[in-house]
Length: 154
Image (cartoon, rainbow, N blue to C red; front, top):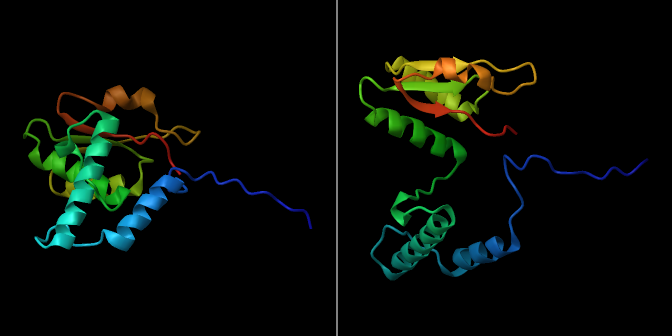
């Protein structure tokens, strides 16, 4: 039987951990555990670790630490972004435009938003399986609050 070398090409879904990240995570898991919402010493140490990480991420992306929100998954992040923004959008600017091939986390969130009265417009995909960006200007207007189009699909 011939040996086949495998190459991992699903880095949109998950990637191997950088060894430095793994070392930092193991340190926290061994010694830094605690409920970061608690007032006891374990919790306050955990809170400090989270705030330090938030500051590092903010510096990497040129944001204020208060603008960084950690979520447990991409699905949670999509839901927070779509529901959060559209819940505060003004009546004349609540339209959501998304791709027909958008990740299900965004597409599945768009459905109940549409049921709640948010104008939702889905755009077509090309024969190559990409979002038809040529039609994007037709979908976006002055009532559009958010355009959800992913950069890559796993």
